[in-house]
Amino acid sequence: MVVFGSIFRIAGAALWANKLRSGLTFVGIVFGVTSVMTIITALEGATGAIEKQLDTLGPSTFMVAKLMSAFSEEEFLEKIKRKPVSIRDAEIVEEDCHLCEKVSPRAHGGARVKYGDKYIRNVDITAGTANIVDIVDFEVAQGRFHSTEDDLYKRRVVLIGDDLREEFFEGVNPLGKVIKIGPEKYTVIGVAERRGEMFGESQDGFAIIPLSAFIRQFGEPRRRGINMLIKARSVELLPEAMDEVRVIMRTIRKVPYDEPDDFDMETADSILEMLNNFTRMFRLVMVGISTISLVIGGIVVMNIMMVSVTERTREIGIRKSIGAKQKHILLQFLFESVMLTLSGGVVGIILGFLIAQALAGQIDMDIEPSMLAISAGLTVSTGIGLIFGIYPAMKAARMDPIKALSYE
Image (cartoon, rainbow, N blue to C red; front, side):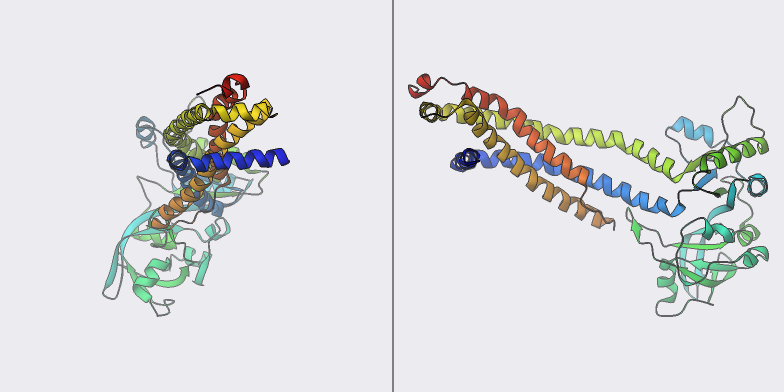
């Protein structure tokens, strides 16, 4: 332990004696690790935010729609030709699927929403049946969601997002007030819990109305169709429920046995997996580009250590002549290399997280320190020190003490 302490002190003194040289190498490592840390932390934070949103669906829920994902222009153009999923499809699924606990058809549209002399254009109008709150984890801050009776009697009632509350009813109780969605009047029965922003876009500029009222006003969506939220009877029965719905949908839509599905079916987990697959290559490319600066920093570390070995040849000879072993000389120079790169890695990790947090703050997204990014930063910085410091350290350790003492 005494030997290691002595080696550590000698290594630190050697780095301090060459402050400019060590400082420039330190800065290079800091830049490299900062970029790696920033990229990984930002991507992990974005994925975490999306995963948090998908968690509202629950582990036993899946979705059915005409088109949910496409990874190429050709795939998109092919899927856009499909028949839309209809409300009749949803009714048949609800009747015939024995492993489905809840089925809720949803429709989406856009309309101008007005209250008094104030209005907001292109508000997202979401329509669903009353049981959607039993499928999706949806929080109501004031009032209530629409009921089965509201849906049955096509009542024009609406639950608004917090953006609409702020714009129309700041400081006023919105419940019971009448707003206009397009030309039609709707009574406000509830206000949704504030969700905040994601990627710079507000998630609170919406209005939710009964599906029957939506169809009465806008008609059934013919081009986009509806989508279905379906809750299986249990998590364990989810795959069987999806298979049952798939068979029902293929039968309804008369899909030949040798043809693929003409609809998409996804779970929250499968959507997240697709997202991870989509971002994995991007992540690898960006981290690869950032690693170039680390490799350059490693080459600089090797050059500096080679120069240091040459400059300290007589010192190495003296230490060996008074009993220093090869492993002690090897460890000394490795310590110098690793101390330089590891300290740069620690600073880079801190700066990377702060930069990622600042970027996330611009789009109102919370992120936490990513253990993956921290581990990657420490591993890469330590690895650079070991890999690029091993050759100079071995050269110093194998030096002949007699030749070293006679070196001019």
